[in-house]
Structure formats: structure tokens, C-alpha cells
Image (cartoon, rainbow, N blue to C red; front, top):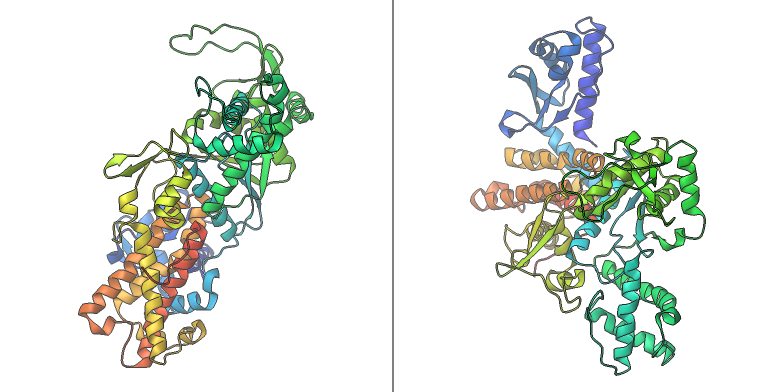
Length: 580
């Protein structure tokens, strides 16, 4: 049941009737006709912009369209009244039994209430995290991991077939640095004095890796040059770090479907094949880039390079794919990797990048547009920085990593559920202050507690009702006489439930899982408000002397908990049955 979609369908049907009667001209595009909650709940239960968006193409005043449309909508038995407001908006009030039907629909459908077929089975690849395999995940990676995982779950819930993917950046010089750092820990495991100076990773997380290397090869690499051990240690260290990263992700309940290696693209002809595909479209050429704007770097020089014609697809400038010495730029394997995604048959690609990759967005979109002939859209979502706060000060250091706070540090402090929910309390492209102290509070200011508490309160009501002999199964509650839900406060909470299917589709379409977290907070607020109001108005309490009345009111509370559990499931958070 998607009540907003149903009333929108009614609105479109009414508009078609106006066309048939000659009130409106034919051929009108109704794609932008919307039915949504009004900004002010006092104005009604729903509002439609139909008259406003059709006025110009119909060459009519919006108010004239609204006044013609209103009585047709009001004729539907679900609608109590339709009022024309302002220049032509229509405010709609629904009959009380509509809200009772919403409660029944939630209980009948359970976790599937709100589940959508919008995606129509489209295959979507969501690439996220993709951190360099040089150490444990830090707090910034955590935000991208949570965002990407919630987005993947949201897309699945809305009817898409999703593949979760991690791109291992194991082809660059940072892996050499990692190997050298592990070698130092290997020497240290043999009792050698070592100095962690220059370009190395000094974190304690490599101590165990160095010991593991000693256990495997003994003294074989002692006093040997890099040429002897570097290639082997690259692979050994990368695998050790990926094991660490998988363990970090597991702390948050994140499992990837695919791990793709950048290194696997080299020496296999895959990069060459991708560039050849672009060359065949006359998108690869030899040329010289314009000098950068502003003060030129000291080492800048005009030189001929192999370039990708990315400006043909909206980029600011064409991009080098091969250096003058014949080596590939960082961009070339990324092109090959995304070509591989297109070849795997995905209908859409989503990449979740850190904010420091903002300059990479246009070129990557240009590459995918070129490779797929504009058939495979690429959406790149940037996650902004996270500032971790405790006792009013920013946390910047970690015993594990030496230089940054790790994902493991954060989960140890607040737990996986709190970590995931708080990471989704801001839109992905807005900076996030993560206050550890606030996250551990049991108060309204802690959103995850507030939502969890609402779910736990409902479970408490169910337990008490069962003790009184009331059948609290969803089937029994759904069959209760819901006409006892007659108070405006109860209707308001049911109206919030009715928004869930619409919210899911909007969040999935915009790739914004934070909308789910916001909605759950509002829904929990409605439950808490009704609970607190019952302290002063006994008729609003969930448990009444009359079991039939209790069943109806408990049905509403149970419906709230069903939707909260479904929403938390998308966010990867366990619903609480009781608060400790």
C-alpha cells in the first residue's frame, strides 16, 4: 500500500477526466504532478501541485484548474475535503478509516510494507570504501563504508539487484611503501633496532604482520636487498592488510560481494583493450594540455602526451592517460576498471568516494559515458570529513594506527549500531561532527537511542498486553476493530506511517539513505509524543480496560515498530527490544 501513489493515481485519473470533458487540452505531461505531505500539517493530510505545473502548458490560470479538479477528487470516498489554497495548490483531507487501513496494511505486510518494485530488477554496482590497502580503516573510511552499505540495502529494498564492490588500490607506489614498512617490522621481530623514518607506515598494526612474516620465512630475508624480498612482500603485506580491512568491515556487519584488484589490470591487456575501445571512437589523441591557471608550478612544462578527449563529455579539460615514458597514469587503470564494470552488464554504477576525490568526478563520469555510449549512468557520491569529538575536543590519534582514529577504535567506543546510525544523520556531502559523548547519552539528543527507545517501548507494551491475555500477533492485531483509533493524534502517527513507502522511493531515487534516518527519528518522535500524551489523557494510552480498544491502539504501536525495524534494517542497525 502506497497511499501517496494511490492518491496521485486518482489525481491523474481526474485530470484525464477533465481532458475528456474538454476542460483541459489533451497531450499534457503529468510527470511532474506530485502528491506529498503539506508543509504545514494544519493544511491537510496531502497536497498536490497539479494545477500549478499544468497551468502554463494548458494556457490556463492554475486556480481555474484547481477549482475544476477539486470536486472530482472530493468524490472519492477516501477523501473528506479538498481545498484550493493560494494560487492553486490543493489541500486534501482523508477519511479516518484511511489511516486505519494504513495500520492494517503495515501489519499485513510486515517488513515488506514500503518495499518497492521501483528498480524493476535493474543491476546496480555500488563501489564503496576502496581504501588503499596500507592500514586499518579510519573514521573517514567508516562514513563511506556505512553510507555505501546503507545505499546498497536501500536500492535492494526498492527493487534493484545490487552488487557491493571494493576496488583494491594495489597497483601504486604506496604498496611498495607498505612492503618496506613490513620489512622493518620483520627486522624488529628478529630483535633488530630499526628507525621508522621517512616514507614508511609506523603504526603498531604492522607489528603482527612483521611477526607473521618471520614465522613464515624465518631468517630468509635478513640482510637481503629489496630486489630479493620486495615483490613477495608487496603481495604478503597487501593480503595481510585486506584481511585487516575485511575484519574492520565485519565489525560493522559489512560484507562485499566482489573485491577487484587494480594490480590485476596490469600485464593482462585489460588497460590496453579499454584504451583501444576509446581510440576506436576517436577519443584518444596525442596533444599538449593548456598550462594550469594561476601561478605555474616550478616543475611544469608543456609536453606532448596521450590524452583522453573527456571534454567531449562535460569535463573541464582532456585528461592524460599515458606518461611521456610510456607508463600509464593513475587514470588509465581506472578507465579499464570501469570498462570492466560496463562489460559485466550493470545498468547503473555508483561510486562512493571521499571528499578528496572531488576533482576526479567529471573525468570518471566522462570515461564511463564514453565507454558505454551514454547508456550506463555513473553517480559519484562524495562523503565529507568526519570530526570525532570527545570531552569537547577533537580526537586525532590512535594507538593502533599511530596517526589517525580507526574504525575499530570508534566501534570499540560506541558500538556498531551507534556508529552506523550517527554516520547517516547528515547528508553525505555535509561535514559531520561525531560527538562520542552525545552518542552514548540516553536522551532525545541521541538520535539512535531515541529511535531504539521507540521500538523498545512498543515491545514493552506487547509484553504487558500478552500478560493481560491480549493476542498480540500481527494477524490478531490487524483484524482488530481499528475504528477505535479515532483521535487526531493517532491519525497523525498513522499518517507518518503512510509516508514510508513514498520516502523509500525518494531516498532510493536520489541515492540518499540519510533520508531513512531522518524519517525514523520523526516516526519515533510521533510514537513518543503519543505515549507522553497518554500520561495526561488516559484515553490515548495503549493499554485500556477494554481489550478490544487496547488491541486497536496496540496495533498502531506495533505498526510503528514494524516500520522502525524495516528502516533500521536498511541502515544496518539492530532494533532494540529493551533498553539497558
